[in-house]
Every structure is written in C-alpha cells, then in structure tokens.
Amino acid sequence: MNMVDFQSLINIINATLGSFIFIFCAEISSLLMKSYIFLSLLVNSLKTKRAPWLVKILLLVIVGAMLSNVAWVLRILKNNFFPNMDVRFYIFIIRLAWAFTVIQYQSFGLFLENIAEPKPKIKSSHIPFLMVSGCLVLVFLYFAIFNFNLCHSYERSPFEFFAAKITHAYLIFLMVVAAIKSLIKLRNGNLPV
Picture 1 (spheres, rainbow, N blue to C red):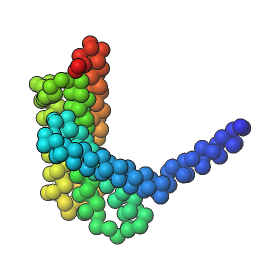
Picture 2: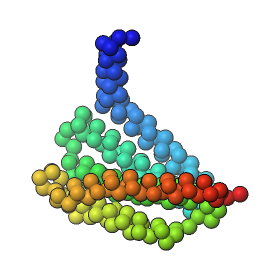
Picture 3: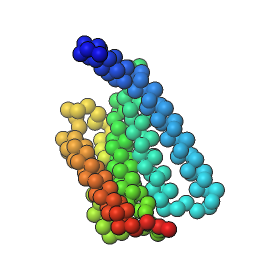
Picture 4: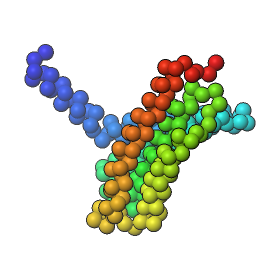
C-alpha cells in the first residue's frame, strides 16, 4: 500500500467516524446500553432487597455516563437539526453533565478502590477527595440553577470555564490515585476470598 492510498484510507475513516450521523448513532446506542445496564442493576438490587454499597456506587457511575450521552445527543441535535433550540436548556444540561461527570469519576474511583475489599467502606483517605468533588459538583449545580439565563460565553462567569478546566485535571488525578491504590492492594494480595 503506497502513501497516497494510506492517506485516502485515513481520510475515509476520519470522515466516517467524525460525521455527526455516526457520532449521533454511537451516542444513542451507548445511552440505550447504559440504560439497560442501569435498569438491570436496579431491578436486581431491588429483588434482593439489599443493594450492596458497590452496586449503589456503580449506579452513580452509570447515571453520570448516561447524562454525558444526553449532553452529546443534545449538542448534535442543536447543531444539526434544531439550531433554534433554547440555548438555556442546552447549557443547563451541559452544566448538569459536568456535575455528574465529577460524581461519575468519584464513584468510579471509590468503586475501583473498594472492589477488592471484603467489606467496602469510605475511609479517611477518601474524605479530601469527596470534599473537593462535592465542591466541584456544587459549583456546576450553582451555575446550572442560578445562572440559567446566562448562556452565551460572553455572559458566563470566567470562573465557570476555570472550574471546567480544573475539573479535567482533578478527574485525571483522582483516577490515577484510585488505580494506584487498587494496584497496590492487588500486588499485596489483599483480595477477598
């Protein structure tokens, strides 16, 4: 395969995977699969009349991921099909998605750290992360509720954009810490029997 054919192949793949129709179908499929998993977990935990702590955490992870899918679907719909969609509703969902993304990553971090524990619980080492996550969630909820009518970038607070940038770094740090703690537990053989 010569370089021109390879470049053509890359262009075709990029055009296909980057098309709004493909992304829309992928987001809808992902949302439907996550909804099914969420409902299955919820029904099974209700049938047993006890929902273990880890199942509740996993439900939060799935809800956060589903809200992210909803935000992407709304973005595609707004940009391609309904350009006159109320921007306030669209930005409200995006702000909620940011709040639930923090909840999703915090929950996933707790899930990772506690999956190898015979009796999972919140430890004192989790408290600082829970406090930072709680503050970030409150910031995004504040902007979603109290700045509902401030939708355009020139109207929005610079702190909102700063919080979004900080959140990226914080979530990566949170996952790295959770993964390292889990790997140390696995390496030390701290697995439930």
